[in-house]
Amino acid sequence: MKLAVSILQIKNINDLKVIDNLDFDYLHLDIMDGLFVPNKTWEYEEINSFVKDTKTKLDVHLMVNDIDSYIDDFKNLNPEFITFHYEATNDPMKYINKIKDLGIKVGMSIKPNTSVEEIKDFLPLLDLVLVMSVEPGFGGQKFMDSAISKVNELNALKGDYVVEIDGGINDETINLVNPDIAVVGSFITNGDYKENKEKLKRVI
Ligand code: DX5
Ligand code: ZN
Image (tube, rainbow, N blue to C red; front, side, top):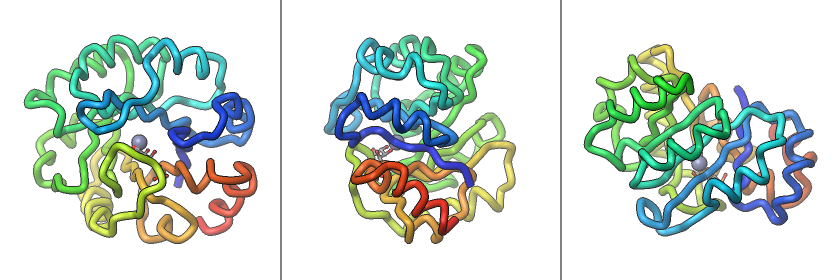
């Protein structure tokens, strides 16, 4: 299982240097527009100034309505993945094609109330499926057990995509699911980053 650290709740953005040297598989960037979710995070220019020199691969999670313009900005970070929300558009194919045409791996995220069934037709086209185990918008929320069956269902469908889970992951909940990638935010960023990562590594 790979680990993607979410820096949404990082105390001091300059700690990114410390995080960048902890060998996480991905740096998970939560990009929120205050419209699709009731919270706003970094604009491109700001986050670019922080991550442009990081060596950890980038995993961009767009929680935005205007998917087009955010792809146009965040493609410049040369991320490994750009993930958009199924619920944010009535034309997912447009963004699947747009991201793939950029040579970037495309992810689709589903909120807790969206079933795997609803996105089944897109699965063969995706590089990543992001299962939200919290309502998107904030870090530090409680893990929602309803995500467990979705991860199992996606694993059973055995597509070429990787399965990523995001929200409320800690040293207990991480063993309730078997994703390819687990996003971990507050469990890492509340306290000593290195110690918290080691705590997690000991149980997976
Ligand atoms: C929530 C974000 C998550 C969140 C994870 O909308 O997509 O990535 O930052 O943080 P924790 O691990 O604290 O739930
Ligand atoms: Zn996220």
